[in-house]
Length: 229
Image 1 (spheres, rainbow, N blue to C red):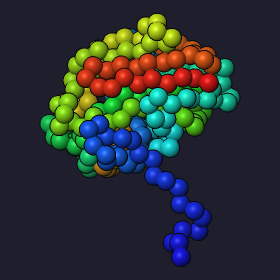
Image 2 (cartoon, helix red, strand yellow; image 1 turned 45 degrees about the horizontal axis):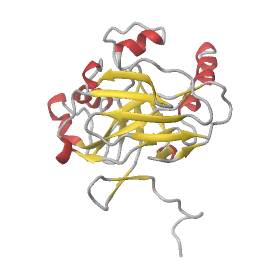
Image 3 (cartoon, one colour; image 1 turned 90 degrees about the horizontal axis):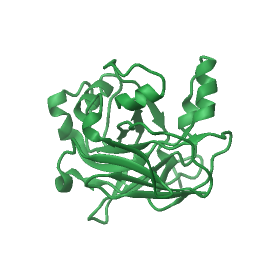
């Protein structure tokens, strides 16, 4: 007899490069405006103010190579290319100098955003959770173990739409680097194994349409490719 009152769903997970194992996804955290140029294009001061975070549902992941249905309740969908950090362990108040030791590996992800919905919510002083956390809002590659990549601190991050460059930057341009981000976030919430952290996007965000093919790149990792349908 099942211990659950309803049928249990499958736990979201991602492939791990070089193995037959999968990485179970617990929670998805995203750090906002973590590149100065993107902060400016969104109308904000890029000075090193404390980072802020939002979340996406774990089951909003779309596997690499998949089709993404154009979401409801928007006419202004924006993709934001990001390097994603996958955690093998966590804790509270993780010191900066220990943070890399929590990392299992890295991937490439898209933070899809219903920008018009987000703008209305901001103007009304309301939460904008559903502008970020909706079905299929987090396309992502497989995870590259840190044992294969080392800790990634710099390198090109880019997004093309239908073969044309849309976003391009360098991971070294993050306002808050990965260890600092882990340190700050773990002071707000207990991080645990299985958590993913989307680390921010460079400038160049703009709307996409049905039929567009997106390819995201981070040096040293698999490219991410999806089609918007």
